Length: 154
Ligand SMILES: [Fe+2]
Ligand SMILES: [Fe+2]
Image (tube, rainbow, N blue to C red):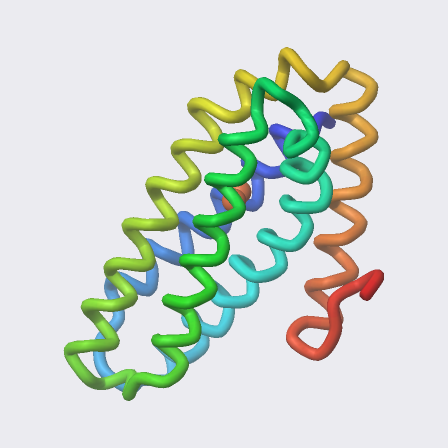
């Protein structure tokens, strides 16, 4: 498997959680559980994707700007996650903010899948793309176990 497919698989998990969370209401157990799952998926994915998709691209002339843009959006999502954690889950502000986060996530995944993957395919050889997928998946698996206490390799 190449890095693009490995990432796409996890994007689909995020999309499903975003859809489910949009259909919850109030300070319920269901919303709490889904929020924890979505937060975890977003945080774990951002770390693994930055290491094994974006970092090598930052050094390229062709994709430096895209890679910086993608990672800046991860940072914006982190800020929205922190805001949500500081907001009462039953308030209208929580719902409005989670909707903003979901829009941001959806736009970000589109950028990656429809634009960045195609450009990266010109820069990563097939072998590189396969080896990046292995490292990406290993970090995903490990960090899903240690989240939120520690980040693998840090
Ligand atoms: Fe991303
Ligand atoms: Fe991604």
